[in-house]
Image (cartoon, rainbow, N blue to C red; front, side, top):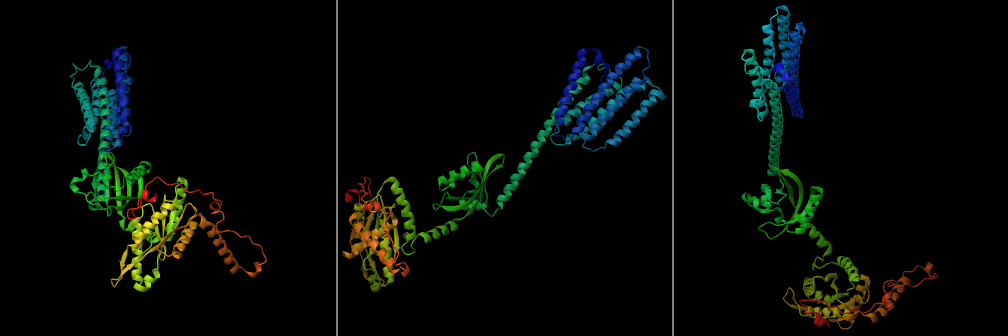
Length: 586
């Protein structure tokens, strides 16, 4: 390809070596992750062999100048030129992605070239033909290589191949000009090989850039296919699905089921934010926190609403952070569980509510009041228990029937619930008995509340099926934290006060105080001894027994007077239907 003028000056050879180094670096870079890397390295080594043939040509000229035989050196030079041609041809076949086999190329070109060398060098020596073969071999190699590069023009992202094809075509033209003897302007052009090395190095870098561009196109195509698959899955999914952009929370995709569920306008998706559908902001925050930690959240219950609806409903959501259309998005699928949640609420109400009056039942009252008492002990606040019983309720049932009796109980319960505060607990304790827990209320204030409640209920009128007016009264017993902080004891003492109210004429309120506590303890002890005697087996008659009060360990503090009267509270206590406020309680 070149000529021995490269070796005339040190600067020429240095520049040529640098060009070869640049080509080597470019080939290393271009061959990484490239399925055509073998063809690239065959090209590089073909150019190296061609450059070595120039050095052998220089040496043969020096031998010839000394008058010595140069046949062996010329033979070596021709073999190197032939080898360079074969390497370039093989490179071209690999660049064509094995469109042409290596073996026929080596066999055909190599055999013919070797025959030509032997024939014109030894059998019929022809110096003119030998000189032409110095250009024919490189010409054949570069021409074949040019075809290999230009073959890739039809493919997408082939700028590197096109540029390399132009460079090798230029080298082929140089060989043709030399072969034709038109070499007066290129004979001393030592820089042509260096220029071709540099240009081929640039083409290798461009080829690598094309590979990156192809991978980018493939990635884009794969993303597009994935996006289409996701859209298809979402479109035909039986569940409502929404995809929202994670950066600004805007909805970017929703299937028909989600559009119906959330009452979304399909043509205006981008104006909706996913957070706008949450009825509970804390619920949304919990979901975000879990997504930050786990990226995938399964079976998360959320309370949602529609832009036009006022009734929230429950959904079971499964959320996952995904890549969608070159953006980070939140994929969320939903399942309507409103009916299930309603069933849960119904079951919970059935477990904690009285079916007739809808008040809390005895079990819930005792469990909840136990917690309230624990909290009151921490805050040192008083509390009271009211035990309520409808007077002569059996007479109402016998006179007007059980249906009217049920109306009495329902109206009594409704009045208690409406008259007392939201923090107070009202429950049906059994039959016509009701129990109330008043938080932040001592015995004195509890009596005021009970009296007002009694007066309100005495004004109630219930009508029987025959249209008769039915009026009724209640008796109330009051016990407070001044007596005990044990729920069982409070209920027993409130019931004792209720019994006292019944004995004293009904339609009244009685408070269980410290004076009643001693008598109550003695009564409890006597009843226990009586029960033990009646249930005792004769074999135990001679055994000694120690009397143990039922209130031992519970009421000792009360008996010893360790409990002090609870000071009046400053907080206002409002009972809207009863008209009880702080001034009344004073």
